[in-house]
Image (cartoon, rainbow over all chains, first blue to last red):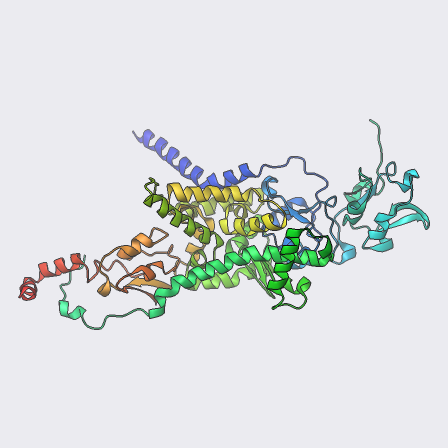
Length: 203
Length: 350
């Protein structure tokens, strides 16, 4: 009899805890986790360095998106699991102009104001086997003329050859990716450790 | 049970009348809810207008986009001279927002941030100071006066009344009110374990503010709107205002903060006639007729507005009055008193 009471107590308390956890489970079900995060997703400027820290500091209020003048900040609306409703920038669609409004408006420490040269969203990387000037298919220079950091970010290899070379001052805003006219986007934003020139390895 | 026999003539002396405006506060509350909801819709449109301005793109806009541009220009031009910058003064939603130089956040957002990031980030914690102070004074006022979800939930329960009138059988189940405190605790545990803002995804005011922005500026709802629709169905078909009463973690936090609130509603037992309209109208399933307000009362003043004998009023006290027994104008009270005082009854008959 006592054992039955104990079992009953266990079943009841499990059911009560399950009832309390239902909303959270439901939400996780609605926003399934993306196992391999797309590397096209950049964090907004001034973000905390590690992904885990950024996710735990972001409260999902959407303020950064609401002040973004080019409306480049998007959100994990229907995916992302634990990082649902956190912001990201996809420079292929719309790139950050480094205005810094999102860093000023963010109520938490997820984004904090930072000088434009100190922003670290990644670094641009060029695939020299596709870029028009690098394969001698005409002149372009779109990436060089859009760069908000000027010569510190990207420059031509020589002054009138239009082959772009990423400089060490590049902060990874992605404007060059947005304007690149090549359909395969030979310029992209990668982690700083991956280098500024894409290496083709045959394996 | 009121055991003390009272002289019926004593009740006729001047009973406390509530201040006459308080029965109209419920309308003011609806005005407030409507303004908050309208602003949540307007702010994303104003942001879209700002992005058009920033891009100097009027000539490239399509017809409907031009309409947004023109109407937002018309709306904002009386207030700002440089909309591209000055409209940044009013941003955000009830989860976290900026009003000029003032930043306000939901206490639940601060609590969630505190446990998930496990750092004291004072600039953010202080943004919840004003809401917390107001909650300590006014209790769960956010739930009744500001919450954009309340706006939709109350419309939803009105729809439920319509459905009931048209003959549909709609459940009105009652659960344990303490469930929401469990949801709050589980949410905190999840936030600690996973290091993510668990509340932001299930807290309706946060969902609504965000999803309206997604829908208007980013061209599509997110997953939160599905969750919110489920809660609407839960409220409509299973339990009236069930989410706010039994599940909402924010409501739980506000209830705890407002437990010893100063502004309370009380029943003036001398003018109450036991009609129970207050209990019927109470969205949170409280029982004002028997003075069961408790920490869950959100001072929405619906019971004050509905009372036909002006027996409900505000008063300042950190504690509720215990059950005062049947109203003095009601049948039960008269029967009890005449039973105690047969002489009075005789006198009354003569």
